[in-house]
Image (tube, rainbow, N blue to C red; front, side, top):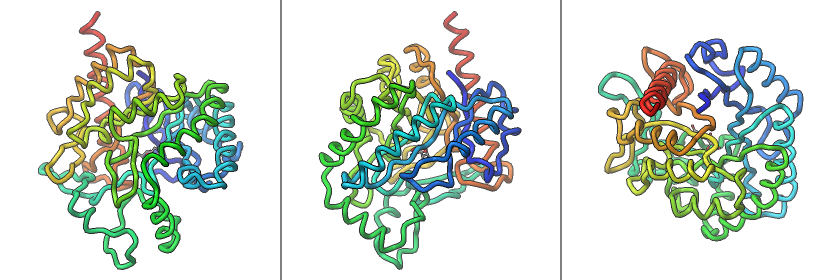
Length: 349
Ligand code: DNO
């Protein structure tokens, strides 16, 4: 495995120098953040990121994410231009040495939580999702008192209304069709540049606000991988996104897709599954529902050699900052992943 860490660029409170001091750190996971979804990333911005990351002593090989424009997901005529731009971005990051690109195909809303600072027993805070709170929100009502994190703030209320209505009129099958159309054009370009594409599962892995969501479970991942049956068409195994549903056997999925050589990136995160949703917990298995050891073992045993990063952390030790993306708890997570991997490796030899 190649240990990596997400960094939000110069605006990030967490610095590259701090990340560099986490033992075993190999790569930085980042993106060009100041270009709207669908547009081409300037080579100068990509070059600057590369220099910063390599200057700090780490590798610049993973992008998370190149966002997919809604016109592609909606199958609108404008998609041709956006697909071409997408492919151009793949060529540009590949030329800078990038080997893996994470992206998602979630309509409008990326990851969704209802609370960003849920207090746990030990005084730390975490992200949480309570279904009843989601059901109380209508994203189309202006007086809705809750805006959920992960929402694209660039939409005006009216634009949001329109795009949500378009998806509500769309079936899952149509979304599958649009994904296939995109992959058939984009994967050959990625393959030609030696870039592994790693789709991120929908988070949480079920439909919200009546919008279709399809990258949610084993059956659908099987279908996804067959849409374009090429090793460059792979996944980001996000343990928290899949594991927040009791229906997904994450250990089994880790083993199966690693054996197929289709896991290019792993997001390791533990969640506590509750009757009415889930809470994000510390990485340690006993803190949540997932067996983190068994997942790492399944990856190891099936030859996983891609990138892995600790995913969301809690806020601990008084740290403030971007919810889920502070330094301390993610660094603890990274160290835990190192420990699991070393023990698995040495236990086998
Ligand atoms: C949340 C992240 C996601 C992820 C995208 C990938 O913390 O895991 O926002 O980056 O879904 O495109």
